[in-house]
Image (cartoon, rainbow, N blue to C red; front, side, top):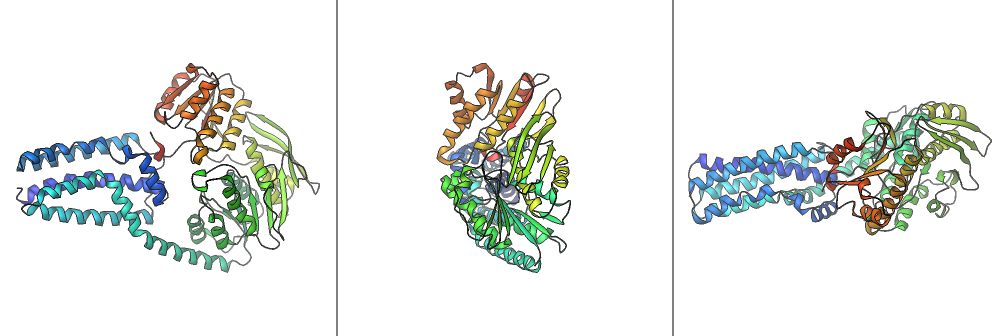
Length: 533
């Protein structure tokens, strides 16, 4: 039986260090899953080997020793083991790194504080057990279970604190409502779509800034809480236009944002198969995006990509004025044509039904960026800006980070489309790659995710398209990219023209071996840490 404060500290301190490291990592995964318990559980179910660690097996040596002999030496062995594995775990996590760093927001801090309180309660109980005859062995078993299954402790803490988070969110929502109510002359423009939202928002913000005081939700702040945060911290009394990006993972998400900001103008950039894991089918996606048009009200203006058949199939809303833009469809209010690509970017023309015309040059690549620019142009012109001013602003548009962003490598050109990937976006990225000059066209990709029961099929089709364009492909993740590998085999794509890497670091190392001067390298999608294999 252990006796003395030194023995208790020797048992508890190293265990606490290791457990805190594991709780911190589990909390990071909870944050990456948006604090949604269901998503976190689905991630844990598919990644049980990552919720724990092989290092968790080592303390069983001390427990096994205690089965035969409950000696002071065994308790010190326990402490030494946990100290060693804590150092090993810390070094391993530093070496692996994280694509998206943990952000210590107020919400995360509250979660970690509650988890710390729960951990201290276990520590107090364990310390008491170590001092009490007959209880100390049970204490070690419980301590071992808590460190091994730290992800469950974070899950329980998230569930316990959920009512408090809901109350805080409700207060923030009301505060944002009151702020917006004071801006009686503010024009709100909502933007939604399966892809192209952020780029269109950024382009529209840059163009309208030539004439108006404009606020746009930053980066990818497209959830209700992101809009609330922007409203409470950035909206000024001098702002004339508020551009709000609206994302959704389930029905009602767009309506919730619209009920807060009350847009009078709305853009639907596209509707496609994305986030099928939560939407289940395309019809639910269409209904959710349609919530923006339904919220515009009498006299509202809807800017719609009329080349998108899913948008064309939406019902009309009485009292809403429709402005149609596109490249190929009939009956357009704004049309882009005469499209040409080169390594300096894209040149195209824009004509409006009202007779306005302009020649546009941009550093941006891809047909989808033409649609994004066209949407922003239509809004700007409808707000009274002339086509020449818009064209000048477009010439100065900067590429949106990681969205078909062209960069220069040491000896080759990089097309960075790593932010996200979806069936249409990946097709357009391959189209850009096919039109680029270069004798060695390489793609690095982990494929696409969150496509529900169509994920295999759509990744298989992506693999078929890639086989027709790419001279070499580096796939990231043996399990994740299985559909693409199958497509390559079916298309008789040579085995010596693709490589399957375990992770992005190995993919980059392989790229350095096979890239030649003059190569063009497309980075298509980069999955978050929750998808690491």
